[in-house]
Image 1: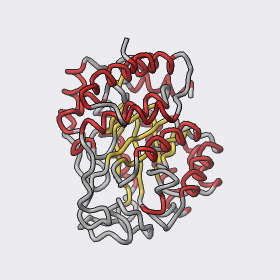
Image 2: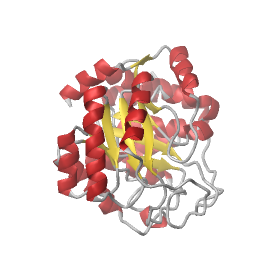
Image 3: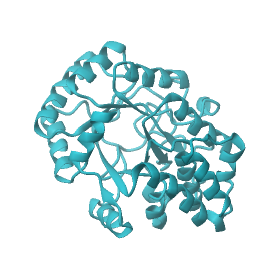
Image 4: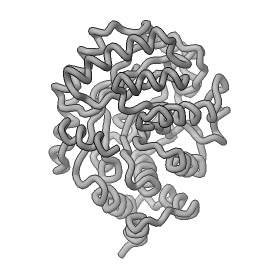
Length: 334
């Protein structure tokens, strides 16, 4: 039995990795990555079988953001040539939900740029979510920035199932990425969403000049935070942002990162998110031996893989898409 399978068996038995064990995953020799992914799949299979959860994003408000996040094309310091617009109308949000439903996507993510939503924007999202729930029954995730408790309660009452607010990087690396808010601001919003009864979704961006220890710290922090869905993004450095030109990731390292997050958060939804196409490249299918969820379609200001290619990939792997009916059953138990 290889050491990675032994580690997987320990995780399945309820053991938490030590910091040393976690670092060893990121330092796995490249020639042993297939052994590592086999072990990660044992953990994934234990809790999720061969099911894959599908998610789709609507960029409901683009640009116009006062924050200075170094990775983001929508920030106040970005010169990237993006299309900026205020919150789209309700019909556009509903149209996106119908498209998600038609593509058998279980979770529909309404994302808006900015530090946090105005009360008018909350009103707008609440109205749309109520119609989405009545018409399609999708799981709805909102990602609107820093939330006030009363705003979180309104979203929950309207039917928002999940709230996303990524920690993005480690506490140690945070000031190198943004200074317009703090790591604790991010954690506070996740806690606010949890207190309102929404499922907490929080993830990371890998490839922003962080050390391996920072990546380990992120995975452990999300475990402590109780994130039930963890999007793992890989930096797609956009021209016009402070991180323009950064390209420090390899497909094999990305696989090690996904395995790490699976080992440390064995029962949680691990989602391969933004940047998977440009960083995992031809190794995208292998990522799903650790992760159990992907985004389909485009991201916020970058283009994703054609949906048909994702469905072919899942079929070729022998994996099964979680149906909307199964998603509703899982919601009842969360």
